[in-house]
Image (cartoon, rainbow, N blue to C red; front, side, top):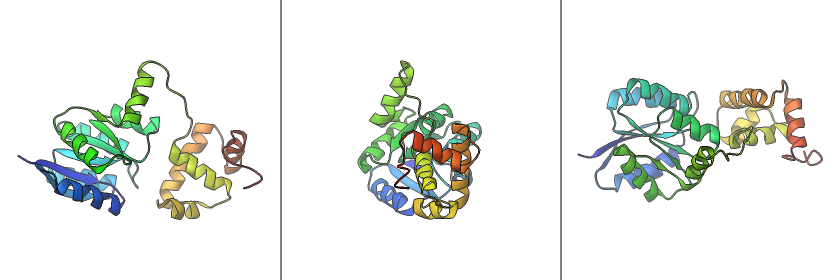
Length: 212
């Protein structure tokens, strides 16, 4: 029987590229596509796929929350995380919620197919960079990074004086998602304003105050 796959990613180009690769692979059937976490939950219930290839960063509901909810309601579903980021928050958030594996988007498409087949068997597959993070945490050598790569992107644009709307347009995400990132930045840094957050970025050498 073919492995029934649901793709969940808010970028149509990414979805179409992965779908084209999966459609050309033996024994794999793409049964549906979702562009948000909420839609992924609905389609899992409707289509009952064997494997969900789930983007970690999506509008409305991120992959970590979607994974947590799906593991409660569909414990047999294999979830393969897919992300452009290897931040510890995303990696360990997704894995701790029950994801079967974590693939970086920088991997070749045929590698994603291999990871999907392995996940369908209930085995774990991690991109090398992700596996290295898991190993470092296991031996107590993980580096503590207060912000994710996406949050650093937002902070750098904040330092340029950009509004949430401008940042959203630049990063191709919703304004609500930008607000969520800003809130998390404040919480992680223990600050209460954009000025304080930007000052922290200057102190850490993440932005050049003269340039900005």
